[in-house]
Image (cartoon, rainbow, N blue to C red; front, side, top):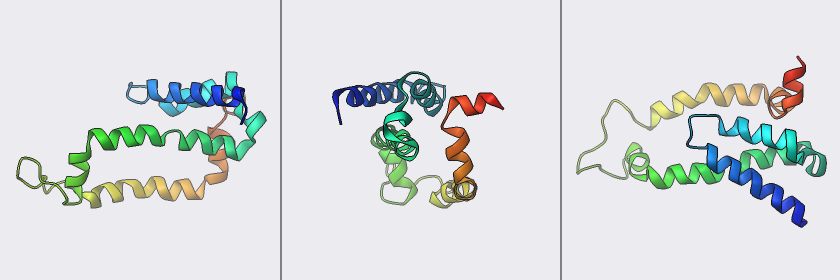
Amino acid sequence: MDLFELIKALILGFVEGMTEFAPVSSTGHLIIVDDMWLKSQEFLGKYPANTFKIVIQLGSILAVVVVFWKRLFSLVGLYKIDGKKMNKRFNLMHVIVGMLPAVVLGFAFKDLIDDYLFRVERSLQR
């Protein structure tokens, strides 16, 4: 990895970090900045560039886990908030059931997602 690629990665990390907790799409901003200015697909290739855009979001997810660890652990029964168990109306099974449609659709339309949702230009040409 040369210095220019490292600078591009730092810029994408900065964009992801600054937009993650704002009421805007951090992934959308990441894709726009990369596609319009940085052009990571040109030097990395399509799949490595898309994988990088996904993996870079792990830092934001880790920040959420660090901030909300008590709530997350209480979902699986590993932590009691204020000495009480979490409200019985919401548990880990609700989270899993809520994620199932996204998982199924993600696997079903993986190629379309790679072709159309990771690029600005193709989305605007339609």
